[in-house]
Length: 344
Image 1 (cartoon, helix red, strand yellow):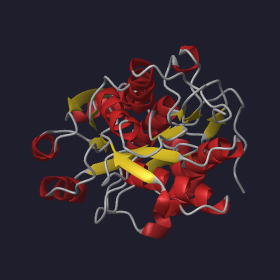
Image 2 (spheres, rainbow, N blue to C red):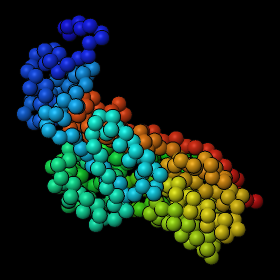
Image 3 (cartoon, rainbow, N blue to C red):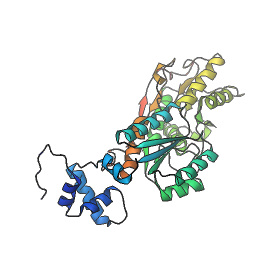
Image 4 (cartoon, one colour):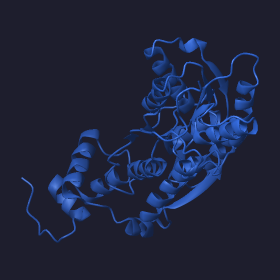
């Protein structure tokens, strides 16, 4: 039976130890994720920590360890507003817990991802949050995941088993493709993301599922790969609109930046969006609703996902007692003005 404590008293590590019938040192080992505690005891202590609402004093931990906790975050770039939102969420959660964040930008280049994974493995970081821009599980990243606390956000890499925070890319892709199909489009083209990335594979699978559910052959849809940049969307749309056959009446883009590039290409060719060509995106970056026309897209909460990834990592390294309440996030279809009935 848990003892009654005054409602205004903040629970201490001593309270947790007393209720769990273990030593203060055992509670400290659980908080700091040390392997000396038996699994059953660890689960018992964590349950009491949650029930009591105990939050470790990170400032005291910092003084005891003689240094501030620090984590790294690896992202492709900050020119993509979605990646910037994820990084901001990580920084906000880290700052709220007196944790230093080290930012590494890879430009979605495998050599830079390998370099940062190698460098971060040798630094005195407590953990790393990783958002891959290539989908390649490098040897250095594999070693980093074995030796350090690593959390993936918005991506999963084959062969590397670490905690991750994701959104339902597949369901979001199904929803936006179904919206295009419901408007009556049959000549649909897709501008996909980098083919090795888990997110682009999930989104492409969702598009194909919606097309098949509508009674069409998904293998008959033209797919051109992009790299999530506006320039690649522009280039891919140019190829789609320059073909000798009939041009598509709708272009489904795997992110918003490529959709912006596709819209720019349409206008350069004298085509109205959505009058001649409907265009959709994915991410719902800031300003997507202010485009002309406002972009039909799929919203995913980048900031919240970054914050959850940071909280998950901080929980694993013992800075905070409780894991985040949510690590799998829903996506939301945002119906706007860039989709209309096919011309004619």
